[in-house]
Structures are given as structure tokens and as C-alpha cells.
Length: 66
Image (tube, rainbow, N blue to C red):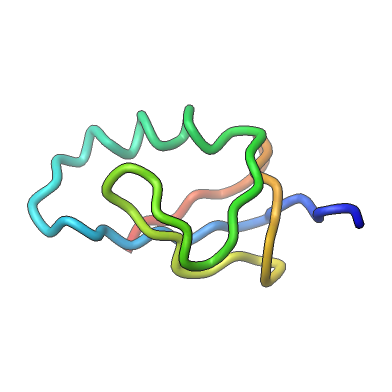
């Protein structure tokens, strides 16, 4: 089964006081990887993906932080 490319991946912060520079580290960690809602990476959790379910993060994927 082919995993679709993500258009948008929305992350929420798990640790309330984590510094914002983790966003830059996160981008490098998820590039080319398959993520799904509920996955935890560094201090963030995948809240939503478009399209829904498991998706592959590409250079054109928009990463949103809430």
C-alpha cells in the first residue's frame, strides 16, 4: 500500500515550556518520514494530517504548529 504525500501536518506542543527552536530540528527529523496522528516527535505530537491518516512528509508539506 502506497502512503500518500502530506499536504499539511499539524503539530501541538507536548511540553508546555519547550523552546521554539525545536521546530527547526523537527523539520529535519520528519522530512521523508511517515507520520500519523498521535505520533510524538521531540516535544511535539502530530495532531492532524491532510490527507488524514498515515502520510509521508515531503519538502512541499506545510508544517503547522498550534
